[in-house]
Length: 587
Image (cartoon, rainbow, N blue to C red):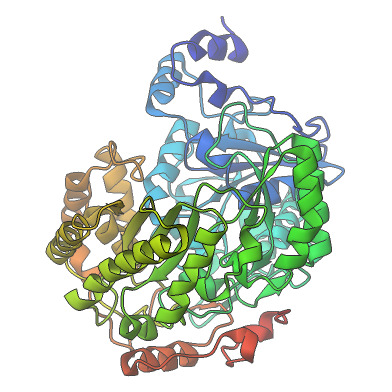
């Protein structure tokens, strides 16, 4: 009889990109010290995407720094690999030691996007783990979830024993210790879960009581928080194959559609000195040829100029590129582009007119948009612009404003460079009302209206030479909207959709709109009922989570939106959102 390794080796050459499944990456930690327990971090996407996820990298590093714990990884196998695994009788396994998932002490899923929900069940299925927590006895691992979707865990809470709402750095390690000690003492799963319930941010669905609040987990000392200085080097090219330095969490801008900007408050910065040291160590350790400065709005980082100065000579000496992600127009300065790659800069005006930018609290004026011309002086010949479509109160005139911005930038480029070679990439997402935002009660525009506005803008932009236009799928936007504000009933829909063949829903070639509509119908639910307007007096599925930002503040911001009144940037003074009670803002 073939052993596990022989079985696996016999199928690897039958699948696309076998390097996804072999592990052994440079900087892999010591896996021999699991005397007190092990944790498998699962990311419900393919290897190349999962290896680029900073959250998983941070948590993986924290567990592996412990003297008697180890953390391993598992990503969603591409369908060809899953088929070969089923034929060979191979259950889903970890990369580091090829250990079946169901044999770990704790298995944790990072759920970063609503369209990953079916991939969670896909991985459960391949691992031989029952979907519902109530159907798993004490022989199974503690199944844990976390990540951005924990802002509203209702649609997937029936699948997990524990959901970490907020930041997992402290919570995951504390849970590991509780489970390890509980297993040594012979405690049952329910007894272990009773203890886990006391961990800040830990939501245990089976033990939830009416009226109880779960307080979001927050890392108060962000400056000294653990960070992966010796990151894993992917076996094959990853989506983001570079050293990533997280500058700060939260955002001072308060854009009213942005879930991350509110969910990750309070705002906490790392010093430029610490970020410089982290970047250098990561490059030296992993050999990356690019450093990415990561945050919700990098140009708002107070230490950015000092950080760039600290990295300038190092980047030149090591021939390392410094990459700037999406920048806030109002805080962009010429020196930010000095050592950055000259291929393209990315800005997010979000809306085409000043009126609509005021509605969403995007404090960017027409004059500040003209500041993008600074980048032309620095040698840039390509600009990426991000917008949203379907924002509350939007009209066709606002879409026309997107076209006018493109025309204005092309004219400014000609004025600065005296040639007509500017390339502009316009990307337009569909507005999705998300929990923990002032727009969480808003209606999403209908599917038909999404299609109409997308075609309207496409035709308008076709008339501007040198502008390319891409937009998010309307059907996936409706589904994302329904899942984002969903309740517990949607767990049955997710399960039914998976049974009908839904998986890898983020991939256009795998997304099956008809499957999802059938799943809703089969469960007696209407997708449209989840994307319509919500009464502000109605109790919402995520109201039991204390995110720090008060409901009163969100409602006040919503009222200001409809008056077209903006709120000042948090860096100009506290607006009183309430997040400081969970940790002090450090800006």
